[in-house]
Length: 208
Image 1: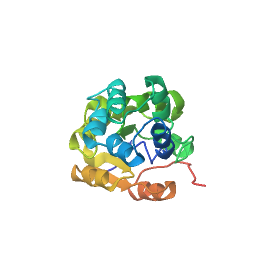
Image 2: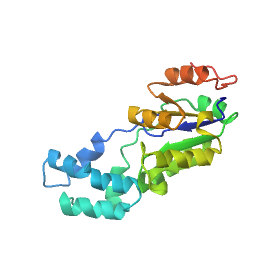
Image 3: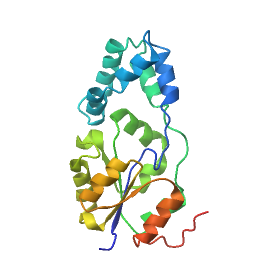
């Protein structure tokens, strides 16, 4: 079936991020070890609930203050936890412009409300997308099928008519199980090859 809409992951595909500076800054405001902080910070019960939108940034901050002895007010925490994003894009705007002229673009991202607000305020890349499917808004995380079902509904196309790219293999596997054409993102050049192999039209776009 011909590809009729394109789905993109956000982090490590469109926008790069590095948690190291943020974790260092948080650790400097704690009285526990770095290992203890990371164990608390990445506790799956809490971080997954946060990215599902089941708890707010305020509640996640309160959890860190209580459990990790974090001595940082909420506004400063928000600033620190949003410092993980690297300026610029991982793929060219020219490619996004070429694709947008021909296909609906849908963003499918596991992220929390704070990072959604930060990206909306600081990156114009979201403007290229017709629909934004954020885990914290649809209450489901990749690789769960429910978040893909939201994206399929937004695209208004059958799964077989969709192309999806994500940097994580588990998400690629999950998308393929639903019948979506899926490519594991490594670089823009590899993505372009995969798009062309799937019959996606790039118009006059030339990769440099």
